[in-house]
Image (spheres, each protein chain N blue to C red):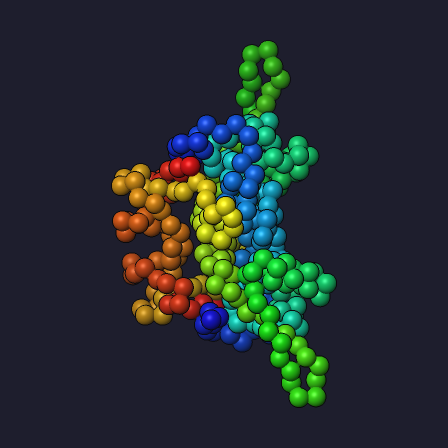
Length: 153
Length: 153
């Protein structure tokens, strides 16, 4: 069943382009390599060599994507230097970058459920240890199922 | 602050490849054009010509992506025929495809918050009309903040 649409969205006749916030996000992080790098930075990896190794990307692709993520304000880069070595950089998430966690955990949830081997890391609640899901919740505090929402523009 | 990792994940030394469910999902829908087509099918668009028009993709790209989405079991395609015209097809989400809604709404939420013009369609709760967010919730029913979860593998 399709989502119910109301307002202008229901009357649309042409591609919304950058009026669509899904598309705007995808223009910033719309490819696999960007998401793999973000995954690793969320996991606490900060150094270029480690990011390359733990994503399995080539150095060229990793460098290009990291530059895009820096330019879009999702990461910051801080120089550091180990005595006797050349200056290197540490990559860390900005607040905007951190706000992408629901996207990453929603991607993970779908992969655990729908793509073999249907396993993988699971988020847990620090306080009670229970497994954490990505869910829908309304401003009134209700849990909302997929069949119980509509989209308004 | 990075996520806290426990278990094997904390000790990883190489790229997890397809042991990572984020990566497995991205290998199925890891590009902008796939997500734009899914958006439109969620919005109730079923016909190829309409999908092309409302995504702004070229016919060639749309056809290639739709084939991938069919092959991966996210969409089904049903033939239909208007009297006097050639047979056409309707594209509809499978249950697996419908389970991608949290990803799409998480992408939309980030785009509304972080990419100008910071507006766009918003999901609402049918029952009470309040705005709906993508959130984290644990199996014990607690709302979980980003700072209050860890990842275990």
